[in-house]
Amino acid sequence: MNFDFKKSLGQNFLRDNNIIKKISDTIDSNKDDLIIEIGPGAGALTKELVKKESDIICFEIDERLKSVLSEIKSDKLSIVFKDFLKINISDYINKEYKRIFFVGNLPYYITTAIINKIVFESNPYEIIIMIQKEVAERFMAKPNSKEYGSLSVFLQYNFDIEKISLVSKNCFIPVPKVDSMVIKLKNNKKTGIKNEEKFYKLVKDAFKQKRKNLRNNLKNYNLDNIEKILNSFNKDLTYRAEEITLDEFMEISNHID
Ligand code: SAM
Image 1: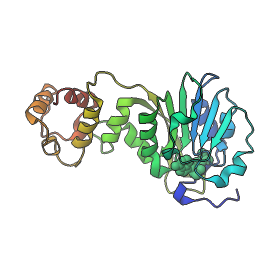
Image 2 (image 1 turned 45 degrees about the vertical axis):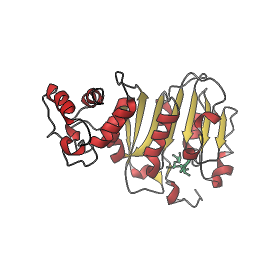
Image 3 (image 1 turned 180 degrees about the vertical axis):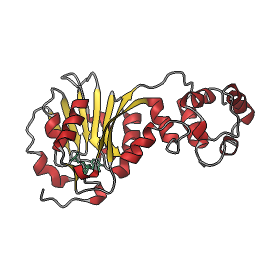
């Protein structure tokens, strides 16, 4: 492809048809659904997605891709040349859809910002994304592993996360430094949280300094209260956040003032 790839925009385009097909097959959408693709690039995945019955909206920041993307002909497809992080998602949804699927081979440096935006500004049914392998491992990490952090807890609270495929860096042009993984985040917000803001803050604070224990990281909280709840799990304030499960964080957050 004769294109001046911009590293600053995370432009590593997919060139492996099996992977493209696999991502597309993961989306079981129909005519009542909407697919939102973030960063279509030269349209490798978009060309596969337009074979479905669903409407598709793509957000691409780089206007140099206008001519190549305009070659994809479909009346279900609209392409918006804007920074996904700066748009208001609902401004572009002008119909009632049953389910909204988000998909994209995401620029690595804004993966978390994109997911945060989707979670807080829309109601996704599923998010199917290709991201750096190490980041995907953090998303799916379980307690007592070094990858487990506040992001793992936040995402696993909101979604069931499934690995779809490992993707070698050789499947991209230009070849990036790292391998990737396709994962599916299925909306399944856990119930039973009294105050979500408190829960998010607690988790963030608990992991503030990963090597410190809960007594240190949560010193601005009512520690007697927290200790009581931890004791009910046979744990105490000498434990570190990485040893606390999602259910336990939820329970603690329901008992702090
Ligand atoms: N989907 C294509 C593929 O798999 O071949 C391209 C993927 S490439 C990793 C990421 C794409 O996201 C690039 O086309 C880049 O220009 C675009 N992009 C980067 N930042 C963006 C942003 N903030 N909003 C929308 N698109 C963005």
